[in-house]
Length: 224
Image (tube, rainbow, N blue to C red):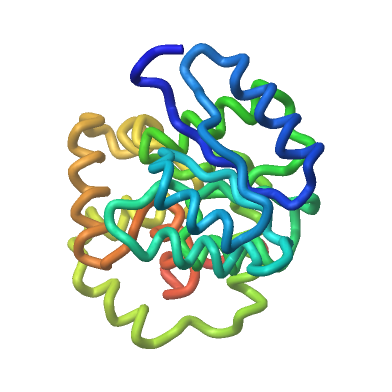
């Protein structure tokens, strides 16, 4: 294990899940599981004590649920990234978790490779938005949430035309490299735009930016 290994805290009330994920992740040369939490309150305490880079957070746990725990953990600066674990890909609570500050979500039946890659993506400061199922989830619950929110819509006006364009592409799940290719600009230019978008809108990361884009009405769910 290298000194620069990604430090992970696993929060799940099921022992078999915690132990299984621990074995899978510790088998990776660049990832180290530094602790386990049995419920939301335990996760908050251990996140503060252990200073992990990523928290794998189950949604449904006793004492305190994953959504409330995520909101508490991401409320501090700096804070670890939170990757939500769920059994169902269209779990209504997942969208609430994204709003609470989670950087993405992963199904509990993910393969070892998917789990490790998800941890790496989130630890790198990116959002786990690439899988189509995540985009569908965000789009579906934005649609169910009703009309665009006027205050959010007004805030889009703070962005430049190019920043607005980049935000829309983020919401579609494109990576910086894909956005750069689409707009025919340098990758560093896209990275700069993304940084400015997050600062101007007061958002944590790309996942929050995608949620904002749907809720503000900048991007509408496909087919609606």
